[in-house]
Length: 285
Length: 291
Image (cartoon, rainbow over all chains, first blue to last red):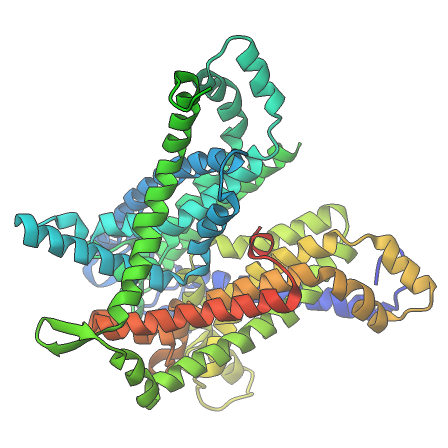
């Protein structure tokens, strides 16, 4: 039961084996994807045909590598732009929400908090379709009343950004308000009694205190946006984000270029994950 | 001090400025769209571009066998996947929280988190390469002489379950580790000294203490599986019969938004109902389970 209590050897062996098997289960799919990105075959399947970097660098038409696959590269840039917009919006709104939730004079504070949590409970597909419905109605009303065709209210990247933001803002709010709750309000009071205005006190005392949480929230928001599929699927127009483009390829059956792009994703997520973990360590220290 | 004086107006202005982003976000992107979805689900088409209020979209759901079956099937598979995730994750969480020590403990915890920073699409792609007819598992079995012909492991319920359990693992492990970490070791030691065995200590000390984590993890995993689209459609193929796919088909393929809205609302209802039941049965609150 505990290292301090006597444990039979067999129990120790079983638990070690179980955890090892679990870790293998966790990493098997990722390792498989990575290994077959170097396979010299046009299908991402065994048998092993020899080692190659073609699926990363080849410019040959039938074996187009990632660096020359302009459709995949375009979708990466689309995803980066979307993720950047979602991140900025989410961190700004999340910070404002954190200050709002900390105000003791706010009536209906608990109700507001419950509503803020709600987007995490609603399935992503439903957030997507409801925003699609509403923007479509809005576009039709504007068209009927003024005869204006508002392009960004139709499926496209603006709606994708709004759809992803609708639930990522909750995550940013949770991360930033958890930090603000630990803030010692006497620090801000000290700034105020030394003559700072409320805005100056917030900018020079409170915001720097929140900065690690804001960066942490930004990293999480960026990743969640970059990887989002469910909500995006319902709102995407002609510009595909990377997950949408990859999904299309997967359904058609693709060359191992899909493995190559996956490896790039695995490495960059791992880098961001390590950055986020290091950041939270620093915060605790 | 009257409300109109400048000193009182300043904080009020600040409050309004702080409230504005939240109100816009929740109003324009959550509350109004969901209300509209509910409204549209009660619209039935009587002639081209002419609609009237009615419940025919919901009737359709109960009359047409395939919709009802898909809904029920999605719920059952989600429940099974959630329970499997709990059963598989619990020993691992216990190992991390109570048996592993120092560096080992941190390393193991981070190892458990890492795969989930990678896109769900990449993870599902990995399972496809492993499980398909020409895939790694099938080839290995043939090579070992355990099978004489390629075996298709994809496109059945077991494949969907493997994918769903895999995808959900993180959301179960973290709350469980957090809950188990807060259990004081001396309680287990005391129970042991008083003659408890592994089974009774688990049942009477560990599991009751871990209940908040168990409920939190179960609720989050259930919601995520029910709303899942990628794993179920890619690993289940044409036989997946997953409810979110049904919603997608109504919206994007058939362009029947009224029917799709009704389905969307039913899914939301089922999801909320089960979350609510889980919270009621365990006496937890949503805010506590999510944090």
